[in-house]
Image (cartoon, rainbow, N blue to C red; front, side, top):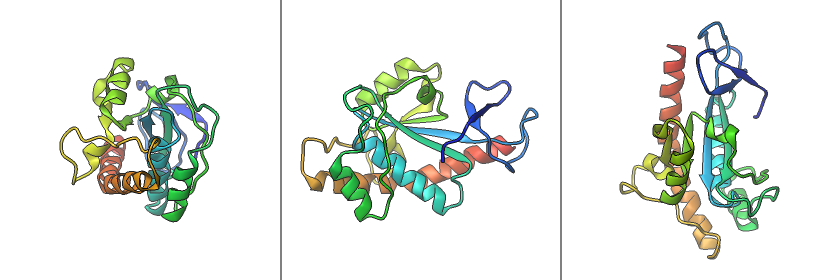
Length: 188
């Protein structure tokens, strides 16, 4: 899913090359970048990224959208997702390949940064030039109250991971709508 980046003239966002989306400023390939962010990048954000990437694949949009995830802290850099997160993902039919990373400049260039909670939202908004690109993930959950967060399941049991994946899955239709709208604007 990841490929080399090709910059779009006049844009600060790198867009990996993908043929057939149209032209903009002489570039014939465009791609969006969504980055999911939590604390250590071993529970919430990799689960969200893997779930959403799979739904993009099913909708045949995976060639147009780059999905990444990262943590605000360095605690688990280089590690796989938490075993309970992997177990939950597998149980719902999702892939589990993941290596934790900390938010860096490449992540901050994403077209949309999706924060698991208000602390991540504040941290990310302080690091980007356009804070409107940073939103809470559950803003895309039609059942969530304004400001709703994805709770950290790390210190709890398996049921916390089941709750998290259910929240993430409820965001998928709204995120897919956002992606389609943005791709239409880029083609435009």
